[in-house]
Image (cartoon, rainbow, N blue to C red; front, top):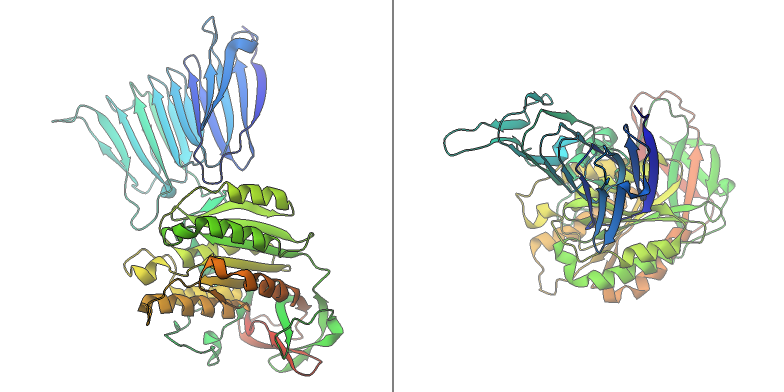
Length: 520
């Protein structure tokens, strides 16, 4: 008996940002095991327990939109394939009697096997299953929770089936189609939603907001002014864990004409916490790298502006300095998607933006803001972070009141105030009707409210074609942003709300930052 002979092939196989490519695996002699991971390249490992591997045992063929991986041993020897696959590909597997295993999640998984065992480990709250076989598997293992429903043969039904139950208002990302001639064993495992995945679903925003907020705030109505009443209703309420002893603030500084003031140091600032002067430990701006993320609203309501939106995204990338990091996110197909994580590679960013297809979908915009924060900024609480949102601001709930909502707007306002992330909505207002629809007016008011709660500001534009003045304004805005840190003199972190006021020791200066934080 031979030992297990191993060969590895690595293919540059990064799919398009929104996943249209298919990987098809055909193995008539052995097993297929696939693991989905946050990698750029597709890796194929070949093993055989029967004899040394030959170069001709497998074949990889590339076609437009398709990568075909085949096991084709001339002597029928058993070839086992282990594949590491990037996210977003569609996966098709064709096998005979060998085991099939898929771990992870993709937009589509189609498995066709004659008599093999099948193991699927996936975040089933994000996936739908449709399995069919002539008879019930000899062994069936299902996750707890009653998510799956069996359909037994009988009457007009000639086949056994297994389907996943609807998950209420939760959006399903992908589908698994399983067709088998005979199933000896079907094992389904429920896995947590992978944190490293380059996309998130709207319902995931609920947990993010829950972790950030302490109590609900009143939803601002039409024409609502800045929140200045009781502490729970103030815009700009940051929250810090009990073991945090350093408070980080993001502060914007302007002169009386709205021009940014640069070159300030820690000695130029005064910080008061509940009226008590604090000692500023650090203040940085020009020398501190910025993390800038662009969120492109690629929903159906902006479809007509897709080319202009790509050009605008590239112009905003040019606003950042060479040592600043830039990420590009998108709201497309009803989910939050990462086009690129934070990087200094401007050329690659432009290539990825140009490759964005003509996508559409709904607009869970408010949920997506929380997801954008959690993607990278949540892990960078002491850095200068900003999110530019290019959108018409029309969340599903404004235009379609019955649309699913993971996060109430009032809760989102408070959560945004707890994020170390400035929000700069570039608000596209295409409505020429006077007066505009009530929901369109509310869209602008809500985006303005979120910007103020974060310490940012809204930049209105009638269309993407009228953004030329906005680029310079955003560039100036970012130059005015300081990262400020101080150790509170009150080291009793008891969950109480503390009001924070920041001043600059110069006349006629405007300072914009959060209003305070809950010390817990």
